[in-house]
Image (tube, rainbow, N blue to C red):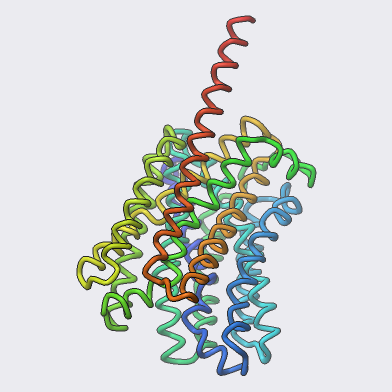
Length: 402
């Protein structure tokens, strides 16, 4: 099998696993009423199924990246998918809410380390000028799952009970496990050794710290609105529950298109591409703000938001890898892991700010929260671009003096 074909199969396997893992993070949102009723808990307690999961990713990704840094990549992928299956199986069979949360933590740890190493594998198996596109293929599984996997899991839960929603995730995990066993080659390159001190070496590097902040702000800017998208479609735009399921699937298709385009545009000059994508997302949020109470114009605004919502993901992940290769070459997997954490910091920040606004009857103003996050992100991108130009000039002077 030639390199092009083999890399295609590897990326397909990673995308399938990412779809399984991506379907898990927000599955409990769709089945929350069933969970609160089944375990006799409050809505706030039920929210722990989301917040604990995000926390597990935030802290688990860098810690597990350190522990597994020198492990065989294929064996690690297989171990991750087995852990993912066990976590969801535990949740599906949980007799108590505490055990369900334990299952969520196990699945979250698998999620964090998978996204860390899968993006590195995706970048390694293609030509250098295709790295962002390869990462985009892998992340497409995650982003489409966020929109389509969750409605499917919710439909299963509403029809056959919440436990079947988690068994659905187990089935997806088994498919991911099989594809990893069959399609991923045995000898993938190992990263260089690293240690916990690597976290400090990354955070004290201004460029790396800036891109982590940019990731949290740029990715999180969608979530003040996205967290309440179903409510907006129903109460503000007047779409029925049946129509919303179809709209979310079409939204998922828009996400996939945007993710693919974002990967292509970020292949050569990722930072400049990210700047343009942030501006595009800002425009989409402005359109959403002014079309939020309109039936058909609102629908177009939602689809435009889907196009730009996760377009920045491949570029953000590629650029931190490029910066780490340049400034902290021994910490590339750890930098990738910290960026995965930053994505989840963005989710937490965006959804929390949106939640505060909704609590104060400001649902229609949630796009402004995302725009504010983007403005700060754009300022940081501008600062990073200036910093990189300065570094390039210094390097040119050093070459002239040699």
